[in-house]
Length: 396
Image (cartoon, rainbow, N blue to C red; front, side):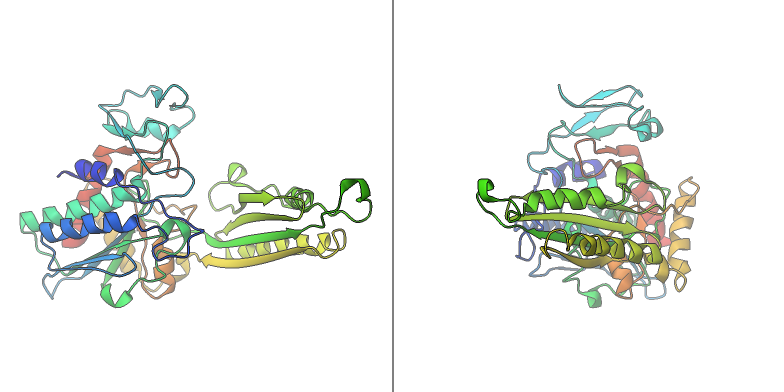
């Protein structure tokens, strides 16, 4: 199979994770892809292949002891914002730069999605407008496997190569059961981004805030001074949060992202994602949400509470001790004709959590864009170029 064929095969398998689940992995269907990847890794020629009880796939290719060892990581699950079941990808040959009609309801124009202007002439894979594609991160898996397969087939010299395919990355649990002793390498990378010329080693500091509102339900005819409407309290809270949303921010600017709201008279909840590249501003954002609770408590008779949980941190804090890993990736990008950049990523990866655990793990691109929604697409040309970049990383 080519890298394109691998991607199309993998996206046909539904692996969407579920934050509300308490199982490991959060959805057992992720293990369906794990079984497929286990079989492919054996067929490609990895020397050791192991699938843990949590569904994580580990594969090791032995190499020369005098050459650096390299590790690549990608995740099997897809995002929760839109279904990843029944994906029906469509190939657009030599994209002409015009509006792409996904279906009768949804279209993708270069004016609304400027990145399309950078892939004119490329063969693209798009969705049918009803699902996401799953390139995040099945394109990463396909690229890694294709690169290793070509290194083996071409007999290229390399050190040990360790590949790990994780579960539940999209819900922040990708490294909860990651066995670091199986990932002992000199240079580690996640392959989970977009631009293939970008080596990402700056990401958001991230936390999740759950604000709970407890109301008092009484017949509205007798409610004066007694009825406390939890849903109205939640609406009041949302109005008080600074209007720094993903829609209004870019670059290193942080945000508050309301991702869930539920409510009735007696109980309501709001779930916010808190993001910022700078630690001081990150801590300030958490403080602001807590202070809003404090200001509302007297109004709503101490019926508002907040729980904040940190999720991951900016891996930039771990960069200084290991610049060689970033430079190795940049050298590989130059080798295929690109000028490397390091643009801060407005998100996070398993690499951020691995970096915090002592395994510095910057992120590389996949040639797929507009992740987490129906407008996701893949450039076949860039995926093929990314295969070459990974090969250079392994053999430099």
